[in-house]
Length: 261
Length: 370
Image (cartoon, rainbow over all chains, first blue to last red; front, side, top):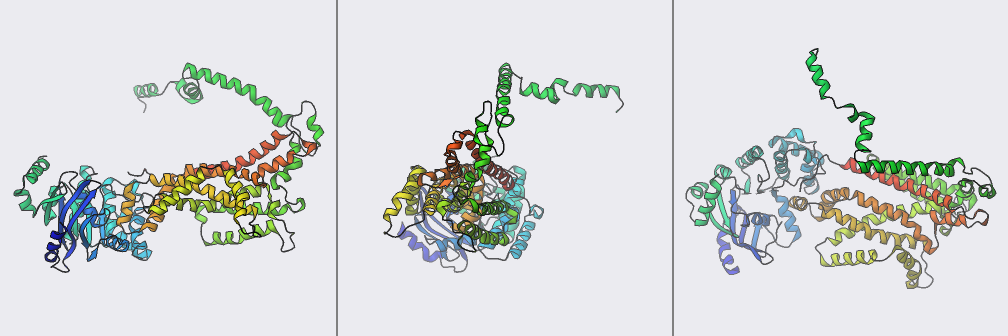
């Protein structure tokens, strides 16, 4: 296993400056449960990747490995040239370069929206408060809720909270954005407002890895759609080919179920 | 509006009179079921039986003012408040030299004033820090003396309310951060830190405070090289801090556990790092939800300070007991204990009210999301 990953690595690292996330032969276990099996994934700068698959297929776990919210036991992950190892400093560097949006928003309830947005820039990037607030207001405008700056997260709707969460990540000027089922906890009308923000972000050239079942979003913005099952990347392709011409039976079954309604 | 059918309809929509006003309240709250009615009657009867005689004893027949103990021993005499009149300085200030008792009094007033100001979060800042930096040494100078023409009073003579308040406030101020560190240690991913925290907490919690004070007082000096002595009051204070820290650690840990995992992950994903994550994200939320049990512990600790009698320190309650040893005034222990109870109650109730106030202020409007 480790040998084969070594074989692959030279070719995959051959495009310097272009690949921003590289996962090589990544394996992960939760106890005895083998969640990620031989994951090889290279994400180029500006690429938008949608990851789908049945629940428990390891898709969330995979993107959570990219900012070290999950550890992995074998293989290598390199983000923007920084290898993710046990080294805490590397981990914190990678985390400050990689934005993450969660299914449950995870805004800080004891801070106002503005404070949520300025906290990390001020404490991690050492940006002066004034400047951090200007940046925060800019991104709040981008996600179309500048008027909520002084409110607390608990006073906002789910869709608004998720947009604040996206803005919070953007304030760190990340090089990659990870989305872990960003619309799964939202009502249908709120899904739309969040997806709109994400589409705009994609059009601006952000590198994005999105775990979602929003296939319309995948068709609109994705360069590549990845289908995972039982911890493996089963199939990956451009959206047209992926949806119209799936190769594996497992993908066909999944697509028939998810597109049926 | 003049349509008669409309006003008639409005009349009908009004609740019937026995459902509103005082009558309605009595009916729905006191006599809504037969057993509630029985309870109401019983309690009223009990109140009538108890309250008037109590008032007689407490106030109407009580002996007030500067009269000797004999007046209190006359038949039909109520509470002997002249005992308190005679002894309140001993109770409040213990064995502190009588003529110098203005010093602990001034110290006490300054201390309580500083605490009162500190309770207002909007006043936190450099001026307040400065006030403490000046106030705290000033209080100590007042209490110890030995300079500025003040006679020296060793802290073995300190007692009463200043001792109770000093031991508990200093104890809590030092024990609280220690408790937070222990709580974080117990949840640490580093096995050695975690085991040390667990062992400390379980060991200290498993032992009565009296034992710790006793060990601090009697056992600890045995380990010191001969000739080296550590102040008795300091030893008691350290013992109480070590004890309180273990309890506070568990309260804080409870709060930490209530914070959803997503908060940790969001802080991590922003690259905050462990200490900033804890200080800026996790602890502010964890401590807020821990306010009720924290105050519970604070109040308990405040009252536990009275156990310092075991090593011969005279706090408020023990000074009151000392006052009772006066042969001439023997037997008026109810008055002495009531007096102490009122003082304890004022402080504990203030803490309770303040914590409720603080909780309301820190509430950010809506429930947290899981």
